Image (cartoon, rainbow, N blue to C red; front, top):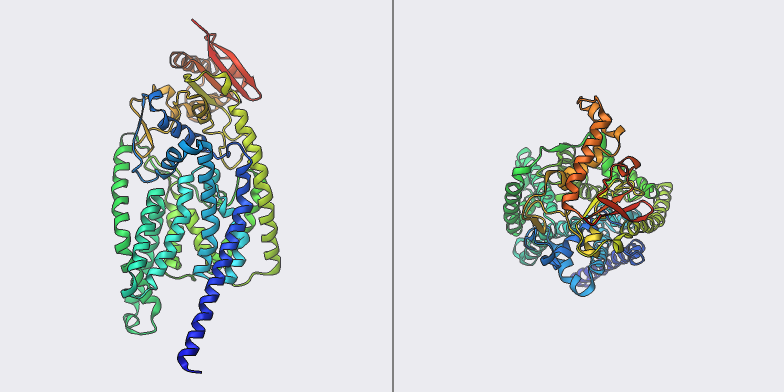
Length: 551
């Protein structure tokens, strides 16, 4: 047989094997998506922490005449894609259906990209081995908290890493198509949410720095024909600069604008302790709502152990230097900064992605069995929690018929977590009253231009959402109030009378601005402070609706 014929036959076998691997990745992704995503089809509203607030914002954008104190910004800001989708698709499908479809698309993106990501950077055997590990990553913590914009950007970012790796491995004179692909994915990722671009830039800088250090340590390495790692690192850094330049420019402009807008009220950064940072590596990625899904600790421990033992492995953007840099940034970076929460936790998906490509070719049979059992347990626990928390959300919204259309409603939520332990599943449940009854939206996210709406004038200090949350936390009972004052070394003489005065002042201001008050799971002591100006109009379980008496 001629040599070229043998070469062609080998190439065809390689192509068939690659196609077979990709079909398997697709099959695994579709199976995981079906197993994880079906509960969304049977709940009225998914019990995702921020979702009611997103429904409220979309309602306000759809009815601006009802909310003259709230002004729409634009859909051009990074992170606006979720609200753009809700505003456009919501007109045709309804806001709840649009939100469900978006959430399902996020789950599908994770389920389809994660196996492909592992296959691209490792091999078929490791992809199959990783399948049970991927289950809690598909319906991850960012989905459960309703941070759907960021959650949607994660599979896009993983696809960008694949595209960047393809670009680095493509000959210079054949890069046009891959360069355009990288540029397009980067822009879309940035628009859906800007933070993954920050993580990828950190990884790129670390990979380029490691390659530069290796070249300086052995100058002759770059001249040898077999020095592929050095050449690949250099190629990656230089090849990525052009397609990422538009996105990096837009990201820099958006960051400066964000800092300027948040500047007048910006608080000092908040840092997490080491033990909480380590705990959050699991809880803010693989842990679901309640202890029922805590079985995801098993794959987390297995994956963390293998990654620690094999940290020197990986190539290019997933090499040891990017892993070390991301770990350091995660551990020493701020948890809250620039008036943005969950700063370092947004690095967590990329740390686990770096861990996935460090799986060994095989695991002991007992470990594989434990991973399979934990995946099955997780797939059983999450629907149970989804149904439980959805019913709880429905209980919170059960007072909607008792609230008049367009009412000036104040919400006092004394139990944001209730059943959920790992998310504040009722934190933005007030949004359902905006969505269903077009009530006032004093709790709406409208503080900076990065949000879809901004407030034209500030609220009175006592009624500001952040101030009110602190007030509820610190004055929920006389015991809590007095303990807080003692901890702050403030005056505690006649402490209970001071607590009464605080609530009396709060109610005087509430009577002025609101005609209805919603109380969720209020302490008896707070109920005793309600002034005669309000009367109970609806009671159901933990829910109380108050209406102002006619004058």
